Amino acid sequence: MPSAKQTEERGDMTRVKTKSCTIVPKDHIGSIPGVHVGQSWKFRIHVSESGIHRPPVAGISGSAKKPAVSIVLAGGYPEDIDRGEEFVYTGSGGYDFVGTSQQRKAQSFDQELTRQNRGLALACAAPLDETVGGTANDWKQSSAIRVCRSYKAAKKHPEYAPAEGVRYDGLYRIVKYWKEKGVSGFYVWRYLFRRDDPEPAPWTDEGKAFIEKMGFTMYDPDVDIDGRTGMTKAGSAVAGTKRTGNVNGSNCQSVVAKKYKFQPTAILRELVRLDTDNTRMWADIHEKEYATESAYIEATKGHLSCPICQELVQQPVTLPCSHNVCCSCLCSSMNAYGNICPMCCHDFSSMGSKSDVKGKVNQNLVTIMRALIPSYGSEWITEPNATTAQFARREGQPVN
Figure 1 (cartoon, rainbow, N blue to C red):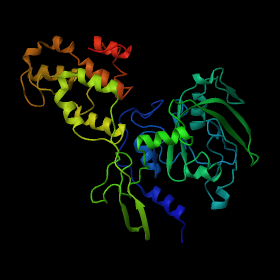
Figure 2 (figure 1 turned 60 degrees about the horizontal axis):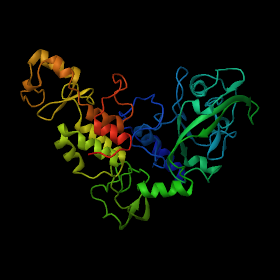
Figure 3 (figure 1 turned 180 degrees about the vertical axis):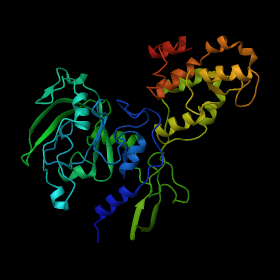
Figure 4 (figure 1 turned 90 degrees about the horizontal axis):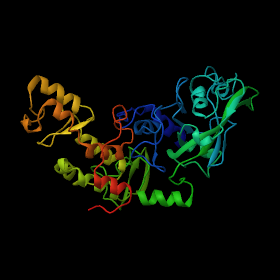
C-alpha cells in the first residue's frame, strides 16, 4: 500500500491545470502582483497557475537565452545547502532516467551550462563563463528570482522548508555560480542565492506574524477553504466550526479557517476616489469582499475587459456610458461605426473626433492599474500624467 506522501505525490501528478496567470507575462522578472511571501499551495500545478513558478514539474523556470525567473527548492541533489537567507542550489541534469528507480537516483554524467542552468548563470550579474563560472561584482544587480520551497526540502532542512505543500519564500539574487565535482564524482553547477525581499521570511517570527495577519492558508482544492480567495466553498461547514468526515478513505477532523477580508491600501483607495469616471464600476467591485489581493486584482480585471478585443483594456478610454475600451480598438470602431459605444450603442459624439478621443486616455485608471499590476502598459506607457492630488499623495502631502 502506498504511503501518505506517495499518495499525495501521485495526486499532484494527476491534477490538471485549469487556469493560467495573465497578470504578467511568463518570463516576468520579480514578484507577482497579488501574491505575497508566505502563501502556499498543496500541489505544484496550482503554484503554476498562480504565476509564481510556471513549470509544473521542472525546478527551474528559464531558458538558455533569458535569465531564469523562478526556482523550487526540493532537496533533490545531495550537494544542496540551505541556510534560509542564503542557500546553495544545484543545477539540473546529470541523471539518466532510464533503468531502475535505484539507478535513476544516482548521477551518471556531468551537468552542462546549458538550458535552464545557463538561464541561472544569465541571472547573475557576472560575465558568462562556461568553464569556471563567475562572481557578481554587486550581487544586488543580479536579476531577481522567485524562490519556492517544497515540503520535500524539509527532509534535510526542516527549519526553513514547509511541512506540507509548496510555499513562496520571496525574491533572491545569485551571488556567484561555479562548477565542481559533486558527491557522485561527476561535475555539477552550483549557485549561491541570497535573499533580497522586503517582506519577512516565513520561517521567522516576523514572517509568521505576517502570515497570520494576512490570513494566508494553504490552497488545497480538496478542503473547504479556497486558499486563493480565502472564501468558504459552497456546501462546506460554517467558518470557524469543526467538520468531520471521510477524506481519502480515512476519518478526519479539522477546524475550518475563518474568512479574512482584503483591505485596499489608503493610497489605492485615494486613487480609486479620483477615478470619478468609473465610480459605478468601483462601487460594484468594492461591494464584494476579497480575502486576498490576488482575488481583488482578478475581480478588477474582470470589470476591465475591452468589449472589442476581449483582453485587459490598454490605454483605456472611459466613455460617458462608463464602459472602458482600448484607445486603438475604439478608434477602429469609430472608423466603421462612428461615435457609438461598442458595448451598449450609446452615442458619445460629445467626446469629439477620433483625434480628440486619442487624447482622452483615463490616466487615473492607468495609475490604478499600474499600482495593482506594475508591468501594466509596459509596451506603450511613458509616464502617466498624474493629477495634482496624485502628486501630493506620492510626496506625502495632504490631499484636499
